[in-house]
Length: 231
Image 1 (cartoon, one colour):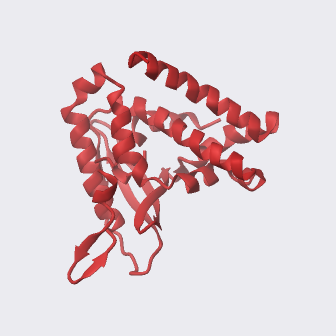
Image 2 (spheres, helix red, strand yellow):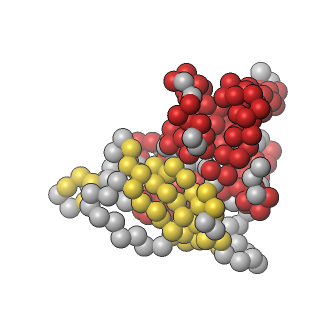
Image 3 (cartoon, one colour):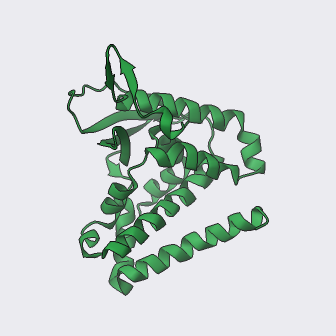
């Protein structure tokens, strides 16, 4: 099971953060972050610049449309799909969450797990975005070698009336863009915090059993969303 403190933090704070990272606008149309021209050479937008820009966009949407999102929570899925998911390395996230069991899975099981894990993240982030309040995010400068393929961007979440929360976004180059594959909260990995629950399910009923478990969880959420949309 996930640590209670981490679980609560994920539900309240992570989505806006991932949104910034992506993932998880927040997160801006996929084509808008792919590259930028610096001087006479085309270079990939830096991790810090990407996070600062996308988080600013997402936080703006959450603040301006707060009442609308409260009335029509299904709109949050559009924010997630457009601004968060494009910035996530979902395959690497799935590998980390499954741990050593990833190597034991078949190709079809891996494909299915990536899809269900992504839906799990959407489910988690949807509620968090709706409940978003007035947190702000500060990113620290990062020295990055020109040929760097991975980076860890340090940041802190500033909460009104509460202590700041240290964060670290783990990112890597994929398809010529920086993507987030994990977030650490006070040194605790967001992605691997799921691993205990997944390992427990696999021990009980194998990888197929874990997939059934996730489909059941995600299926309930899909049904609720469809009911609200009149499907």
